[in-house]
Image (cartoon, rainbow, N blue to C red; front, side):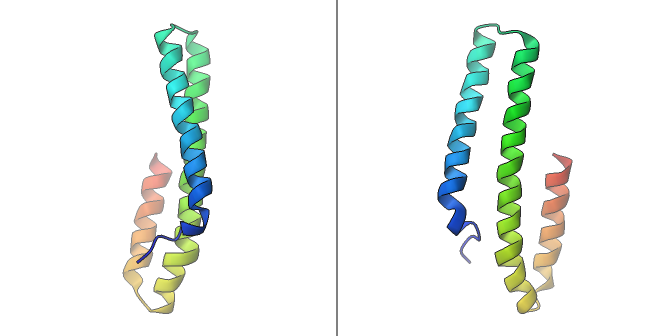
Length: 91
């Protein structure tokens, strides 16, 4: 089965590269002993950005893999979706 995010792959990769840059920036800030609140602010921005990527992946999964599974009466995909949402919500 091909991943449901294929149509958004380039956009997802671009977001992930930006996040990678943000993380390098946080590393640099710590190395330069930046003010704690400034570092925490940047960490919060990284978390928000990665959450957005996760939500996009989850949306694509629902609209492709889960829809296909429902059409073919494969209930295990629904259970898998519920577990994925639970993991994502805890993070």
